[in-house]
Length: 383
Ligand SMILES: *Cc1c(COP(=O)(O)O)cnc(C)c1O
Image (cartoon, rainbow, N blue to C red):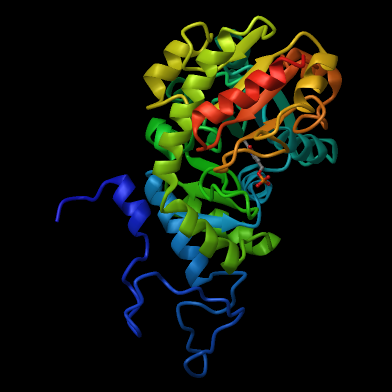
């Protein structure tokens, strides 16, 4: 049979592989430990912190989607980021990261840099004059996040990865926002992809998990060693549920993305909305690059109201859009980056990244789009 498509692989991960009962859905393995078959005779699994059949199945399924060699599953997306910085940065090395990266990633990087583990340098990866000199200084690790959160700025992964490789840096891409349905950074030259599986891959807002996908066997071995040593590998139950979520990932993504495009068009026409940030809009500064680099524009839409008071009125007026952190679930959410996801980022840095007090971020779900637009209309009427 010819090579299966990505969609088929995600739907079919582990299906009909149970040799005992012929179970169609792979059973969950909750055991923390496994018997040795005899003195000094290990089986495939020894202890579930190190490896677990259910978790490993999910890691392999995500790696297939990302065109990676293999993947490991962590207890959160933040745990995935931690594994990368521990494994891939030498003491005294430099981590080059986006100035507008996910708030929790910034907090981790900044705290470890302040402890003296490495040097953190922040640049704007959408501006060549910002990142080119920083890469010339030979960082050990280059961290990419495209499109960025919450303004959806797109950086040229192939170009940056090539420049980073030329100075011997390792390239990690956080692909949580774009997902492998739209973008596969390893195909563009990244060495490692990290995910908050909490978001689109699981897609049902009912667990917290992460993934680290490596392009090569050597990198996977090193990253897995660290995940086990740090004790941040994911649970079997969360992995089982994530695998279930992954089977409908492409369907959910397509439906949410279609809704997002309609909502972006709606928001552009509203007099109280100042700016709409969605890479699918021709007015978005990254529209051209997003069109070239991605196979879709995703399902996150951000927009700006006049000020914090307007944002507060809006946020208190939606009913279908729940005011909550996170994104990527089947249900639509709304958040206020300045006081929520990016609260840990100092105000000056936040302002520089364009995260104003009037900025609102929508995670568009798979509801009927007419209902979502009605909800946004009535909330905007209160601004
Ligand atoms: C949520 C998120 C993370 C962190 O993942 P958790 O599962 O919440 O720990 C990292 N990067 C991005 C882009 C995210 O959206």
